[in-house]
Length: 315
Image (cartoon, rainbow, N blue to C red):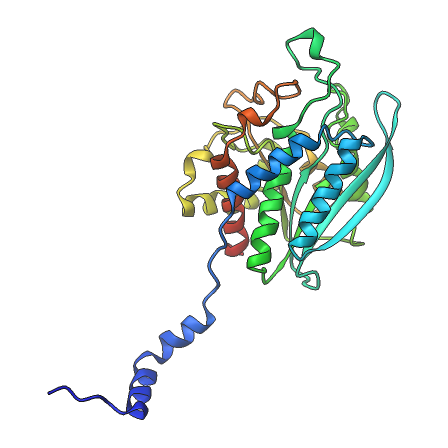
């Protein structure tokens, strides 16, 4: 005949039998939040509709308002940095960098960055009649933006224990291919005049062209030289999630992207997460009028966003 132990005895037996495991459960890390690829895709359609995001244009102003609204809704501390810059073709343009801080009082921080502007001309377009048109920039601009916004949404639901910063950089893409320093104008300014003042981080990840169907993310050479530990963190997180095929073990050339100026100006390692082929080429829509949502994949956005969240939780 079965007897029911008293509540006191049951409590005693439970504590003695699983004291260690119960304590462990109490201290267990919260699960990694889910990256919402549908939300990210909806945001990229909004980005496309509002664009192009040429600095100083109506599309740029509307997109800035959209980004700030989404970040504020996510519970972040939103910082703005305004300045002007002179382009290679002699124009003076307004520049707006935005930062969203989570757990802003934490000294130990991780930086995630992307540029949010688009190129004012389609100089790589195979159709001469299209070369004067602005690039829609849905992948080259929009994809990095929506990955950061998707991470912001996840951090609202699961606040991080360390400091996490999302940096949206302006005026990256108004440059001349023969003058490397004519690119990344917003980044160059922020790296020399960071907000918050004297900003530093444990490491950073920069996102560029991270939404295309069929995208893979090889090892970029500046990242390999100056941020190998960050590459390892990302590849380890991808392996945990079964995403190894998206992070192939081949190396491409040196890409002068925002991460270079972030490292030069702030001194901590930053990896460039960027889609390139094994031959070192960008996708065929790059800097053309065809860089539209037609080529964007929810699945790729999910891989990039979820891998990044895994990196944060591993830390």
